[in-house]
Amino acid sequence: RPALRASFQSVRYTFLEGLICLKAAQASSSWMEKKKLRTKAKKSLKMLHGWLKKGNINVVHTVHLLTAEHAVLNGQHIQQAEGSYKAALASATRSGFLHDKALTHELAGNYYMGKGDDYWTKYH
Image (tube, rainbow, N blue to C red; front, side, top):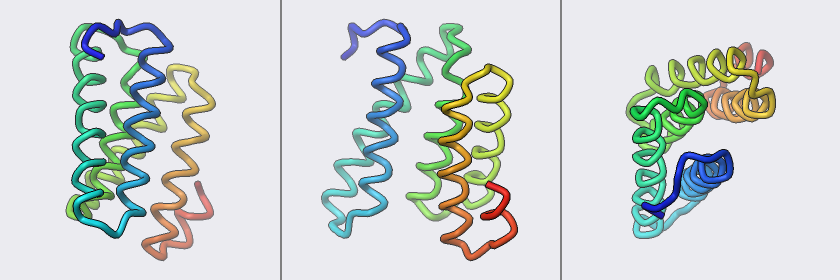
């Protein structure tokens, strides 16, 4: 994958791969499986960060969303997760990625539902 360029297909594939790994790790009960999936997701996030540093502004919302899901998986950085969800929503809206905005609302709603926060669950 290092040869991948920051084309739309490559960015989309990398983003979805990272998101799928994070969601599968959240659902997994095996610590070994969680570790394997977390490592794969970190690689995707690192690749997206690299594209962002090279000037691809179309990956900003994907980086924020994966950061939020990674924080949820770790369970330690609740404020980071909430801030990243908000940043992903703002960035996806500003950039015109309506499908990713909807996905972010869905994932944030699930996060707040898991916390038992009815107000924010209904908002998202």
